[in-house]
Figure 1 (cartoon, rainbow, N blue to C red):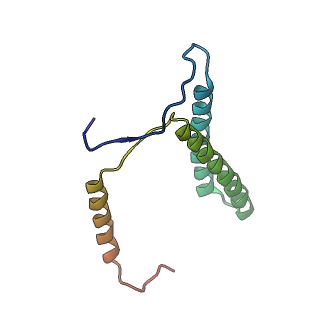
Figure 2: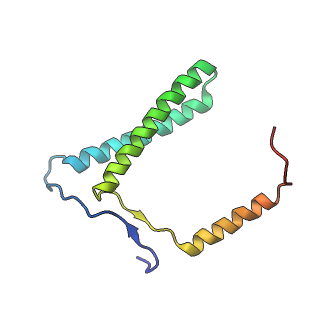
Length: 112
């Protein structure tokens, strides 16, 4: 691992390592399912042809996304989900790149 890259992770809560699924396995399975469901609902939102249907799917999507976030937070809290710290130089480069994009638009104009 690059010296500049660091993992952001809480201390890992230990679970039994057995052939049977443990708490971490079940929660990880739930997280994967919720991610899949939010992706599927997102696609359904793009293709909903009726406003009422769109609103119903949007409500379900929001609930599912909130559930996914709660599961992610739980896994992160228990130390079962680690993320890589962002490289500050790459962040600055990306910021400058997108700042350049916004400077290409005339100020005061909005998309109608």
